[in-house]
Each structure stands twice: as C-alpha cells, then as structure tokens.
Length: 125
Image (cartoon, rainbow, N blue to C red; front, side):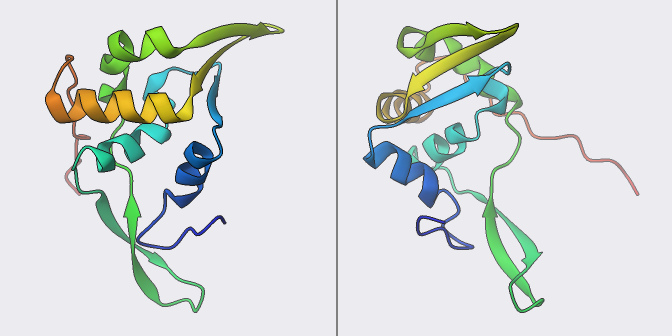
C-alpha cells in the first residue's frame, strides 16, 4: 500500500502529506491519531520494533507505533490547525496533514508543549 514495507510502515501517511491531504478523526481524540507516530519519527524518535509473520509465514521485524496516551498533550499546538464539524451525532476533527506533521514534530523535538509519551504498563505473567 503506497510503498509500505515492514520497516517503513508509515509510507501511506507520507503519501497523504505529499498529496496535500487531511487527517480526519471521527468521534475520537488525538490519542487515536496514528499519524502522530509519523511525527514522532520525524522528530528523531526511533519507532518500536516488533515481530510479525511475513507473507511467507516466517517471523519478520516490523516498525510499530507505541503508546499514544500522551498525544492529547499536543492539543495546545495542534488545535489552531483543526477544523471541526458534526456528522449526525459524531464530532469530527480535521487536520491538514502537512502542517500537522510539521507542527507536531517540532513540538515533540523541542518539547514546546507538555508532551509526555507514557509507556504502557506491563503485566507480570
């Protein structure tokens, strides 16, 4: 899908930026915006690496986003970019992809907002 590879999973999101597209959140908040993992990568953070079965059925290494609980802390820097609308009873937030990527990456890189990436809690087995 648009150049996506196991160690380049956000290629479709990069294509969205290149096409001048938008990110639409339908009834959810920034904590569910997968697009912000691309901003983390652009800010210099290394994506998590996981193992998954490849097309052949053998395990392969893949990039993966981690915990997104802290993404809501980007609201102060991203809210000036957002448009809002309602579709029925659903509240939608619309963000221009390119400006959102640049703004979020800059905030994460420079810590210009109260951005805190929370690690998921691990359970003992």
